[in-house]
Length: 230
Image (tube, rainbow, N blue to C red; front, side, top):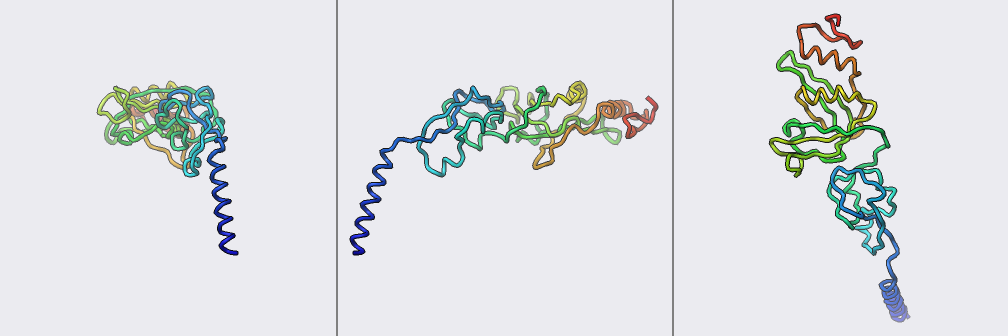
């Protein structure tokens, strides 16, 4: 009787395998309609869905709904007609109004060229040298859009390296532009829940900037004015 049950079970499994192989795939996965470059914010018109039958080990890193991908940043190149995997895109960002700013950086002060699109950073500006120098945080928790060198092959060259970051509309862009042009820039990677808002207020930034340019004028006070009475 046991032998008969085993024969019947084997026949049932063979029938199930045969019918499963003949059934067409029905699950749709998100794919790119065109090539998406690192740092690009993914939009709905760049995505489609395609039907595929895939093993479970692959299905776990793919998306079935384009809405799960729209608004996220590509961390690396995504080829046209390629399926979008979770490791290729950054975390979802809340929708914000803002601008993009590109500025030159020295790779030695920008995490040695290891920054990638989608990461968050703080930007510090250092004015002057030695004991009279001043270091200010001018951007906090901003997202890297692109990290390139002169030939566009990625941040890491000796010269020509630039960063493009998303700057929230609430930030006084003039102060940030001044810092990136007049000071030595240092980049700090933000991890976990450390991302924040712009640390110094605009008036405090100007006071400290003036102090850095003229350290004998006095010390900056907490209310955004310096000790020299300006």
